[in-house]
Length: 219
Image 1 (cartoon, rainbow, N blue to C red):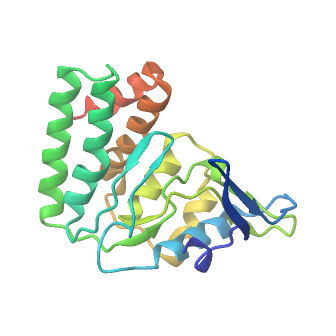
Image 2: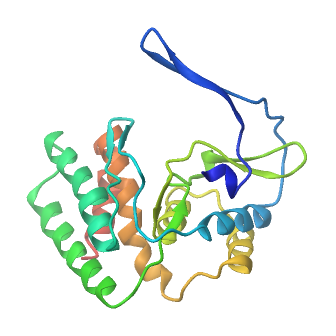
């Protein structure tokens, strides 16, 4: 799916041996390249559209639930199938409290109000677009790796690029040259940054609590 819109490693074989999965991909010689071209590639991915939000199957990634039931309403998909399962898991792990819940509910209310009047076109997403999941071939051509694909708001991918750094102005310039982002993005980014920070709160513990709280305190 992603490989039809971007440069990705080629899968040679995959399967299972004695209960353990394996994946064999082609060898890639690594080099350096242009983030402008990387931005153009990501924009091309996001220009792949479908009528609904989601994917044709659910799965678990690093103990995190990926509930991909198709939805026509982005609000239903994002809040019920992305944020709330992560909040539930955080509560089960003792990493949630009344203060966080109060501000989380306020965030969800603002999100619902905004998207009641603003439409979102489902885009193919990389799903985990941090700096460790892109590289450049020796030829300089950008490559996307380790995806968590589904169809959603493309701003979710863009939000991930802002959480841990590693993406430069050239990346966004290249992206906007192909598929310009909508005005007001900075005000919407925290809604989507929270998704990735909740995932890290669950995977790595309270180390990420202050970053979660920094988002929630805005609501």
